[in-house]
Length: 326
Image (tube, rainbow, N blue to C red):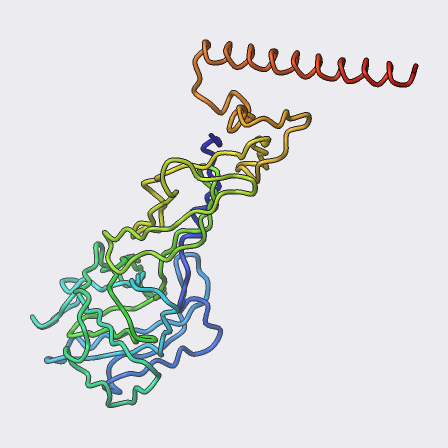
């Protein structure tokens, strides 16, 4: 049996579809109404310059401010994850603020086959938009000085699915807060290519639900073959491989060749005695869970075969010598 060595890099489980922090120019997202959100240059927690959106119309009642991203292609993903970084002003720290002040905002998505959105379509309301969640800040900031605000940056991740159309838009609704949307990262998860139990499993996208398990069939490394049952792994919603089923063994006359951290192939064993009795017995003993009695039996069998072969060659040599003498 091939050793259970796995090659895995956790960083390979995330694929970004959109990252606002990488923008070198204006994001150019659509705003409704014009007096709501505003795009400005800001700084992240590491003091890197980024493009952000902010809104603070807390002294005006009945706020309903929307902002929509550009079209985001899903690239085969069935479940989408959104990481948000934002800051929210503590309403109680704003003098004479009305009771309509909020410290939350809403996240929506809208699926489409092509980039057909306009300034008025889809309509700025829930249905046709699908609500993902109401986002609340774990920490809000309250101090203000002449040099600017001392802010607490929050980070939240939400996911939605299944998605089936070519792409989607995200939208954020403010209804009376004083906040800044600092970063939006959109991504999906996958299980990366991995070598496990002597088989290669190709890259596999996670399923449509957070609890989904997507089955992937493995292919034995060169000169390996399946035994017992078909070899499988399952990719979960977090991009992690789990529930291994089946195994691969080296074919007769081969042993496992380990390359770094994984089994690269089954290489041919030098001087292997080609006999059906040795099928699956040419792999190093350390790869087996084998009893001492079994090892003793195999050793005796090998000596018997070697002795028999030696006698046959001896007889052939004597016969050939006798013929030449005559």
